[in-house]
Image (tube, rainbow, N blue to C red; front, side):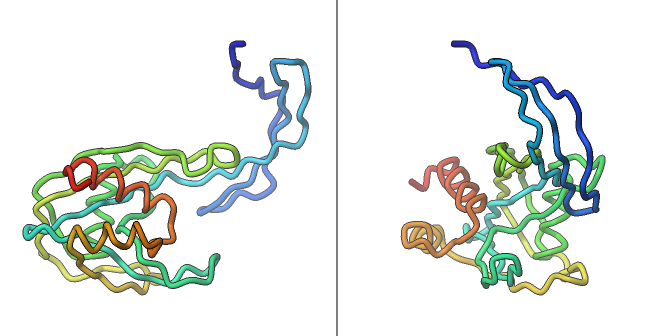
Length: 182
């Protein structure tokens, strides 16, 4: 059977904020069923970086994540500003969070964090040849440590489930596969 897109009959916003928007849609499915309360979270797109220094260390950041109430080891990255090219966004985020600049930047994956309930994408980049060129320039709500790990250490973190953020685990797998570290 061919799977068809749902037909959106109506849509209304329940919450419309900078960081998250909640919309409820009424949709008609291909079998004729009408789903009148399908909730969609609208988020901005994100960019994540698997960032390698000149000496082949992977740059990670450690920070508190309030929603999950955890201290999280993550790849650098963040929100792509409206109208911003994702490659510019990831480079900007890296400079702001880590102070590093890179020789190369390559898109390795575009993923949807949860396409059942949200509409945003995460662009994952592999950056190589990083050197520290700036001081951190963090947003007022960001408190994070920049840490460097060998490729083997990061692989061990993945195997032992030490990285909690699913999109960052995906980013590391894509990045490590791209550099033939698996």
